[in-house]
Length: 215
Image 1 (cartoon, one colour):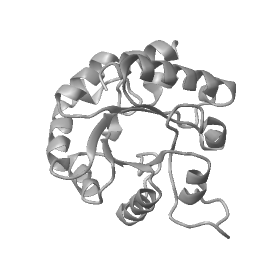
Image 2 (cartoon, one colour):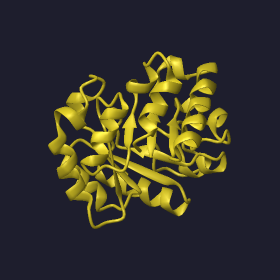
Image 3 (tube, helix red, strand yellow):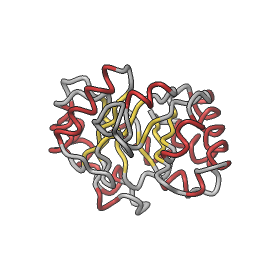
Image 4 (tube, helix red, strand yellow):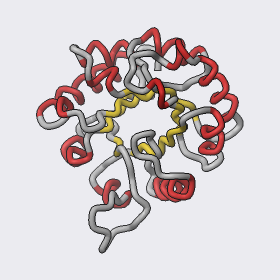
């Protein structure tokens, strides 16, 4: 899977999101892989049901009802959101929250992507049973220096840490090209989680297609 986290970049909001979804659909069809988009939260309803798996960037553990301001998994499922990122380095939640979120998403038939800063945390997250564990060394996020080239040992160690369970490994941090994704695959990853490597690229269609070839 290629998962593009749009964070809160303005370029991927509003009409820009339609271009992002179009690029994702084209790349998925061309390369026969899953290309998912995590748009800014206020765009989730607009993005869902457009032929691309749409992920939330975070979910809370409170349920429907009087939970003002919370991101409720059951309500996301109701509008067709496919899953959620959990514990991203910019939205850390801790193990107890992660465990509850993963369980709730599983019960709803939604996909969970639990983030970890390194192999040890990847192993702890994998023990919670998410669909994917995404390892992202925080020091490389947004730098353009890919983890697969500059910290390959992180991926191989994380692959060992998650092996034997149900979770598949994604990797992120500095991933910008198909060559980066190919190297990650060779090291044991089942796909990549990217953000600025796509959102800040001059041609989203080309950037997504280049990465999707190796996911």
